[in-house]
Image (tube, rainbow, N blue to C red; front, side):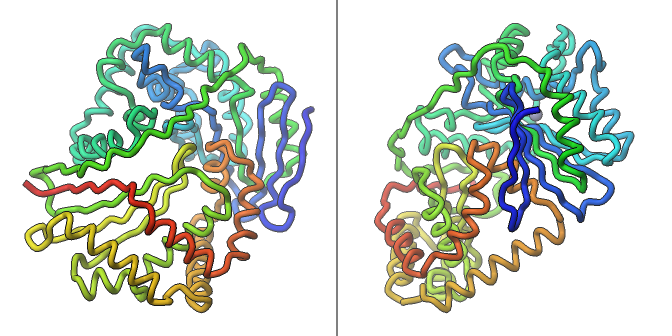
Length: 429
Ligand SMILES: [Zn+2]
């Protein structure tokens, strides 16, 4: 059996096993999950790895669909059938940075499902009729008729301006004519290249014994062979943001939406924690940023400031709100937001007392999340999927406690000085 180590004994108790073929297993014992088990199998491949020059976009997502068509040993749909029969739930997702297959199932079905996962990692059977059928499903998904998709041109406009030339510019599902021309060979090439044990991490959360489950994992996954070394292209692109105002009009739109988007380079855990706390602070109804925009300037009734660190290459901060288009010019809104920032910095709002308030609110929210969904899988799988060491989870908690209010203030100053943001608006007709 491969090497293994125990991490963060004081909080998460995660245990890791690395097999000789490079396959990684992360286990979190969760005593609150009595009868069931959650697993995620994460492949270190996503839409970013597609060869756009050769017009092969859409492969990562297409392959995710094909993975449910079975092998010689396990006929099509057997995976889903077993899970649903047992009352479990399963799903899969493709992102720019990774692909993830996951399920919550009765504990006693776990081993059987892992055997299927191991089998379809190596022996996927793609038959011509299934390939064509799935192609139409995938095509339908990217131009579906549901309401969310009407906003796709708007989102594409945002991606064009934020990520010009970077793979994040492309829709995750791929570009339609590319998908139409994909062949079975394309799918097999992509599959053989990236679906290898050294490129996968299994995460399990259950009330099981680590030694026992890791023996099973070893028996099931250790015999798998790697085909070829994986050279995942490092995308070192930092295209300038096209700051040209992005306006999209839609007749289905009831309200006018305003977004200011900052694209930030990935930095260290300390900067990340400071930005997280800054955004929590700016969201506080009692903070001068909120009060200036809502009570004084009345540009909206509600605004949201989000920090997204779920991408491998960039962090995103977004200020968004609904506004009355008749009363406000777009340029005026940017000016007012800038004023709100300056007011916030001058107000001495960010102080020791406020920081402790933010921390309490954050702790309470985290505890609620854990009580409603007594699970850590989201935290762990996200960290694994972005290729970050899972030790980061523990370090982040420590760093966050160490931060002073001056750190939050400094990250606000940095944000104020950053003029490279994108303004986009979704307007009614
Ligand atoms: Zn899909």
